Length: 154
Image (cartoon, rainbow, N blue to C red; front, side, top):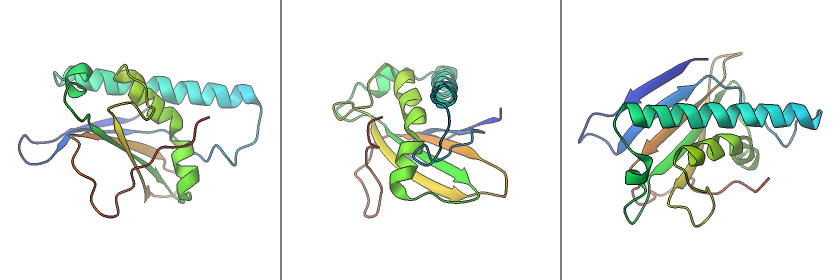
């Protein structure tokens, strides 16, 4: 698996960290197959995300509890990179395991009472190349056109 970590320069940006994980994120709503295959895929995605986000925050000396200590927690933007786009409701659902993994790394829930705020996006990537970018930044007021929504519960 490829992991790329990009730390923002202090004072230039609200971004704390960006991770690029080479994970294939597919539309869970449109996949058919045995439930064990889906459970294994979700478990793997969640585990990798939890581990990589937690380790990256520790490596840069950030404690998740410190990021959640203020009035507003960080904004986490999940971006799916793939050759073909998903519609917005499938996008949020397909990134649910990644969202849960980030929340696990912060040792918090990802529900409405959580201090974590969520954003979703997608980018066109080259053929047969898939990834997910996780960007954690200090929460700022939502700009017009920002997508800040919660995916449906499983």
